[in-house]
Length: 370
Image (cartoon, rainbow, N blue to C red; front, side, top):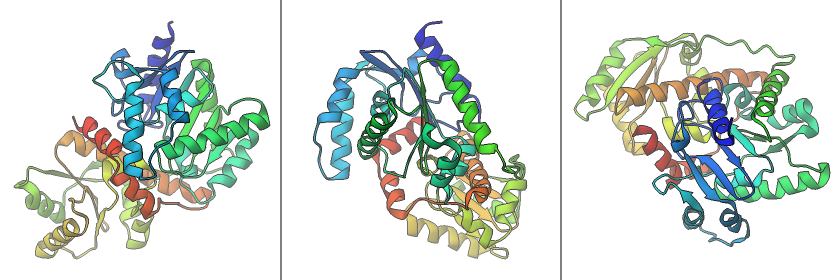
């Protein structure tokens, strides 16, 4: 099997497994001495073919390591994006993953970066660093949350170099707080072995059972109010309910554990603020709360949590509703399991604002919708 076919196979292997990849999250790459092939931004790994990858010059990408960029975060990311586009060999109608430079940096032929629920139950927990040190020791590099893009690239560049000087080779496992994991190896079977090892080490000694993630269609007076309220704006709403959502909708205290995003992907697909409507909120009062939400945040609530009821998902079409439901359900699972590792650790408002306003993530969101 050719190198590119192996890249396609392993991309689909993880892309079709919701335990590892939800919606358009995650990215994969293969590189030789001169070129790197990496998943295009916004393209789902599930079902990806050769046309879903962008080929770039590693030599031109290397210039990003040496160049100096603006101190202004918006201008800096535009400058880096421009240099990355100059490195594209083909095709010129797709944008490479924003994490291309990170893939190019890691000294292994195959890189598979994912945001698995089980791994992020640790990465999005208060004891993340301690758990990684205890379970993986020197076999993994742990990186505290850093805004994605150039700043994360420079931080990883320094930490990987330090790791190599200390241990003699690049780390094959890189855990990113409130983000996910990079796994690198020179063969796809080894990548799979490493992922299996990560899974077994996290599970060791833990009770990781959780309420069922299965969500079924649900209807209530409140969901009908939301549907009618937004119908004239060509927005669609649907309500769902299941054992896992019941756990977090049971009270406002439980809801607080899912009231803020844990990872950039959650912001991309679900935004960063959600609406909790208490028992007894109905009729005109519910409509007032919907209007207040939009006035406060300048967008409609994609996720509405009905106390002792279901989740109401609001989007532009039913496909987007399903994506939001999958991502938010994964978020609830992460929140529930994180209790085993010290409790949930949400992103800060500063970190959230960077993602909310980052052109790269807005582009990824638009591709996913398209």
